[in-house]
Image (cartoon, rainbow, N blue to C red; front, side, top):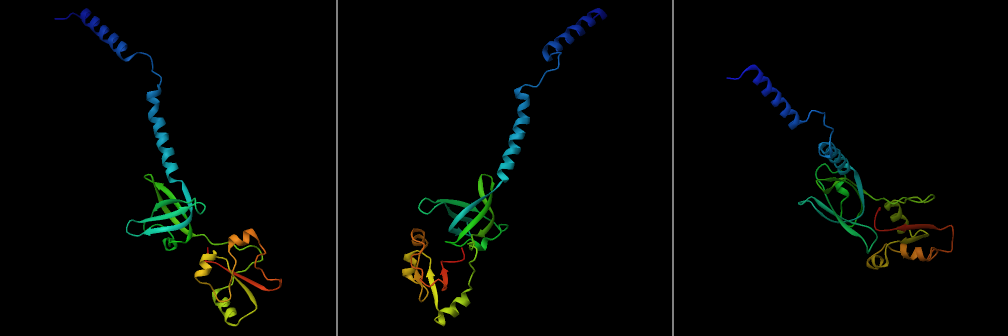
Amino acid sequence: MYRPASLRKLAFVLLLLSFVMAGCAEQKPTGTAASPAVSAASVKEAAIAAKEVKNYKGIIGDVSNKAKTISIAVGPEGKAETMMVLFDGKTKGTEYAKKGDSVTITYEMRDGQAFAVSIKPNLAKLPEGVTEIKTAELRGLVEKNADIALYDARPEARYAQSHLPGAISLSVDRMAKDMAAGLPKEKDKLLVFYCGGPT
């Protein structure tokens, strides 16, 4: 049987051992203890970065409704990179995802993959002083043999395949080299340019 003095000694030894094992001073956080907060911040930053909305501007390649993917060529012709984007029923503007059309796909990253939020056609902005002529109005002018200068601004190869009656080939490349190439001498003549579509 233990006596009270022995019990006191035993309690003192146990208390001393607990201080030695656990330490009696308050411990300051170390790099390891702080890392959960750092990793939580990193995870939060990664989640924010993943939700950042970005754009691809280019020409639609293929669209697969089965795989729910769109390929888009981004960059200058000849150096364009093909990007793949996923889409679903919530993607706005999927009707504009047609092969060969110029579009801007707004996307966000989900699980490491680009996911289309919206698709919008890249419509040409007309310079100041230039107005749009509707197809029906142009047709009427062509049928009446009106005194207009009608220009096909598509590449020459497309002009050679087919063009509107009376149209003169004046591609964008040719205009860039010589702006006055093919333009009429009469400065008051109505000039009408057309290309491959609204973009």
